[in-house]
Image (cartoon, rainbow, N blue to C red; front, side):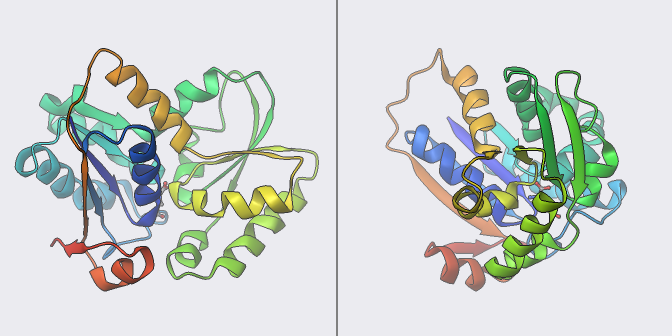
Length: 243
Ligand code: DGL
């Protein structure tokens, strides 16, 4: 099976690497639209026009069986419109937002803090969950801090948000970038439960793959629209530039 992963940047890479750990015997292709991140403050129309060529390339030129939209902001803003324009791909798109909603549905009802980009919070997809009492907090600028490698700045921003809501101990990191902070957050707040969205994708892929077996050795390829050397240095992978 060939899986394409799309995000504005390195959040999608985290999600793909985590899926590779669980399901290694498949072909994985990652595309990050790093030339245009962050998507969080962008309009729906702009996100659709930025994302569409990448999704079409994954389906048409890379022959992906499935494309995972590993970006909440793009997932809420533009997936419906993309499918309206390209209905032939509807059944082959896995939107991380749907995967997350399905996962949250399996959890016991609780009070939950949802941290996400401005675009995701404005959309309201995670703040009107029927099973949970949710407080949504937009984190403008956090994606930029994570992309620029300012881990201390990024952690400090999240600590502030958590300390502002001291009663809530279940936290959904609803931007794929934020998953990079999860380990540090868990050490700093051991009594909290931090939910990263890779587990939601594991469940989605599990359902998809349950009837299939694979004898592929597995491979992964990495593309970004911006300067590839940044990711090559940071992640030690061969990253190819894609316009
Ligand atoms: N990883 C994207 C998300 O899950 C970040 C969006 C952005 O570029 O602001 O929303």
